[in-house]
Image (cartoon, rainbow, N blue to C red; front, side):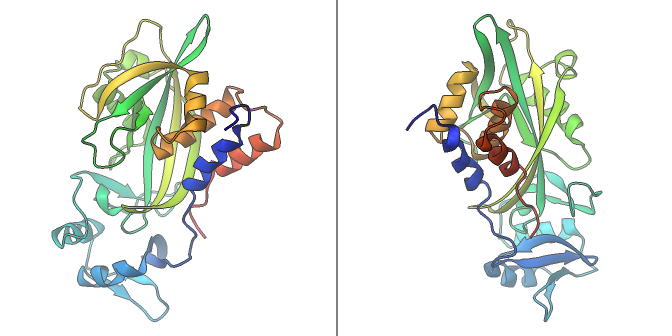
Length: 282
């Protein structure tokens, strides 16, 4: 594989945009708004949990059932294992949440999930470096994969900046006086089918330039170690391997574009930029 040809990066974009909507999925409607997308095999499970299917193949939540109640029923019926964390449910990234549900249920119902990612950057005399974490082998999803210094879902009631502050302390022991210097840089979206269900995700991305003497420390057991890698080396790693967690690849591609590792006026540059704004809706 030729490292001078970054077209190999397109495979990560394609991997994270594997879901074709509507395709086989049935719309999930709440108060006349389509909020999620349901695979056919989930329909009997949802009917047992208080969801109604009408003649137009829409799936609708019974008005007497809250989203939180629905999540608890699905967990009780062993359709999914609880993650013991509530997430807000959004009709779209630009609307207010309409309720809350256990995080594990989001992909099961094709609801939008939100996350925050931080590029922890260091500028040295010989170039730009990036702090990279290694996920615990005990993680339910993507164990052992390479990850960001800070990355995580956004719990109910928090916006992406507040979630960043929370995750920075929990995951890497980054003090508030440093994390408050983080700059919001982009939003990435994609829809993909995975083992846990339909992932329709919105990632809010930040850059933080850290001092050379700062050492992140794992704090919550989700990451087993951090290593400082030259940006060019992580670029090659993303090109050549699948060592990096699937959606972290997208945030890194966004970083590579902004740091000029892919020629600014090349057709590929525009292809990658468009690919990072994957469709959340049909």
